[in-house]
Image 1 (tube, rainbow, N blue to C red):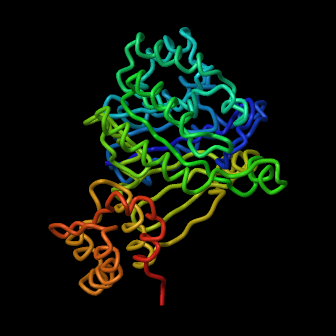
Image 2: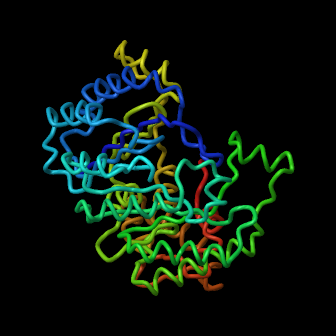
Length: 377
């Protein structure tokens, strides 16, 4: 199996925290989409005949695409592989784009999963984050999607905002749970260099949430969502049973994927590649049938490190038998030796040769995974 990611970078305005590649120059959209279709034709053979089981439209703001623009993408894909074989087709959407008319249009497309960027149900949070929608619009959009028959809806939330209180975060979660989404992704706010949020912090205009409070919020997130019947299947992701994001899960389970569009990343098991992070340059490259980007051949240590990083993020953990089968006994011993202090301290569990993060290990997962990695000699 394989997955395809299509990057739609266009946004009407930028959120202050976002470091994903996006662009507000909407006049490039038609040429960009034509190049995206051409790249798909050029590179589809890289999947080497693997059936495409997941499609993911990420951004940027994919819900900014019109019916005609989406149709051009569907037609290109349908000429290459049967869309009916795709188990999951996700479209990221801003709540204010999801009008009843737009939702009705989407029901006549192959899209069967909507990932809605809610971020917060607090009006002041939304203003601070420079979001385009209100809390009421987010709730209305969700209800309209349900009424239209979408049975797989995910919502994104952010916690750890400057000035956010535990009471405010609890209220966010209650409003989210009341909607009964099938999937919830919740992320601690990160100050990425180059973003407006980073500049605000550096200039002293905002103060980061205290680490202790952010950890308390994460702790409450886990408690509240598991009590509501959600399975905590990845550090930042929760789903009702059987409703995991299949596309994102494939990333964590070493499944090859093809990333199309400016800045999109691809992986085939032995090599990583990524497209140029510039729309005009991307279009020029595709027009000339030249790959405008970079490639990296993975060493054995790179592959081992990728397995550690992705597997430990999930509830399924790191299978040491599989690790040994792929990389040999020496790397398995190395991994276990590095893991041993965390097993003894209760931050990692090792049962039936499966390493998993414990509840206390989740809070320091980045450090644990870094300590299990191996650098090239």
